[in-house]
Image (cartoon, rainbow, N blue to C red; front, side, top):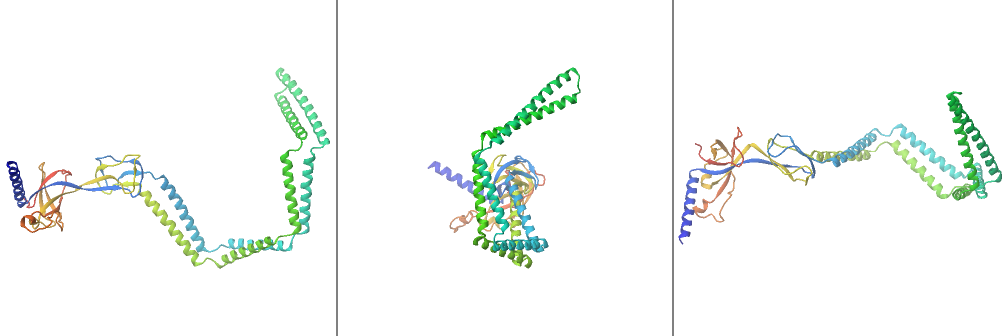
Length: 421
């Protein structure tokens, strides 16, 4: 009981002291600063941090930079698409050029000529040429199947023997000239000519030997298969030319004529309004895409929105941040304030703009000004019925604190007098 009595006395004394203090218009608070939490609307990897905690930064100064390689590549692609859309619109607005109409006329003439050729059928000279191509392919196949003739092999051996004899003579002549050159009996030019002759003779001998080896080896299987395929193609071509064009070929040629004539008519009619409207819409869309990517590229650079002190730096190079995640906090030393909680009976003495005296625990004294008075109480009992309960209503009043000499810091405790001294 004695302990409870002591606690009750202390509580009542503290409440009476607080009431007397509030009645005298003296409140306590903590100086705070306006904070700006900055970040980027796009996420990514941090590649550069340009400041450190505690630095004083100015408005527009770079704080961090995010990786932007992929965005820059996307921007280049979008700009190319924008340029293409702009060129398309410009071409449509200028209308078809004379060269394009001439090309369309030439395409119509070519398709009509092809159709007439098919409708007339194959000409005699075409049939003759196809027959000759078939005969030539069959002759080549027969030669490959029979292999080399004895006369060809004999001629190849004779060529090799002659080339071998020429090489022996050239080698002997080179050896003689090299000996004379060592004795100084001939000029260097004569020795070079002898070496060239020996090299040529060696190459002729190798070529002759290769030709003879190929004849002795006979025809290769792949050469025979290729010749057989050539014969089949020649037979198919001859049969096709002899029979004449197919109905489906004529129908395809007729469709090509109609298509080329329609293209020519479109060019001669000029550009339609709906085509220009579509091109304008495509250009607007391309420009919007470029603008969106450019905005994302700018968001890769996080700048200080205000001048002040970098209070908190949340990232380091290499960190990955998500969109909207704060990367730093900047406080404005010019924008200090104190929030005090004033009872309802004392609130009537204050208006927006009222001058108040603010004294810090370190002895600094400044004149503050009421900046904001809330319309609703911060702390209110559930049922306000008695005078004691009404005294519990508290309003959070925001008091602006000047700081011209930067002597005040956020976090300092201060005493606020509602009645200036």
